[in-house]
Length: 326
Image (cartoon, rainbow, N blue to C red; front, top):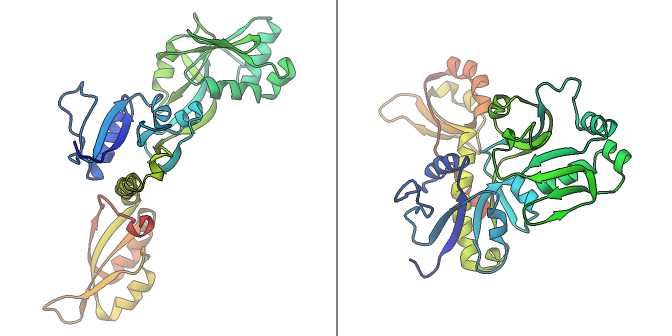
């Protein structure tokens, strides 16, 4: 192992495949000894990697002798209230945090409806979730909850600790398979979902979207104070940011006659200015290559069809914003 090492933790589980593909595009191919290996490598002796559950990662980036860099969902950064530095939204692993009720609950369309229903029936509302902080805040900020219970916090129940005073609304910590809990163990759930398929398969329906989340690159604030680690983090950051930028861009090549050159250049969007060079062995022909936004491509077709000879389109693997991270 190198004398200087940056400790990076990435998520095990549903995000793992997305992160693995993302890292490969960034030139950081993760190599594992086996499927059960929790310590993959990327061929850089200065980077140590360990797989952890995304729920745990933010808290392992606090203080000395902890991880320097990590990837987790922004939902878990918020949930844990971890004092970390969010460096980059990777724009992958998108999920929604949702409130779900049984399919057969008719005329229940919101949290307000649920709270009124259980209050009217003088029955305690039971909620299962992994998101204790989010759920408590979601409830106490609700107008109907305030009207019914004032400032009394809901009762939160975990195997090791119970807090809150409102026994009419109980939040149970879930350790997974949250969608399987209703209707026997609890009444409703607050969970994350990317497609909603598992929720539907368990005879539940989404009635409110509470928040959304994507995977983010986060840093230990102590690591950013160390000059070597700070520079190493910049190296990784530029590689990852290059993948995000590349997904939004196209690299296009075309040949244009000299008398049409200026007209094409004026109508051609580019990140900066297109590269123009005279074609060898031809009379009055030029080659143009440039980077454009994907969203602009279809609008360019009428112009290019009229003035250019042929068109080659590439999806770049990376576009590194080197000048941004000097």
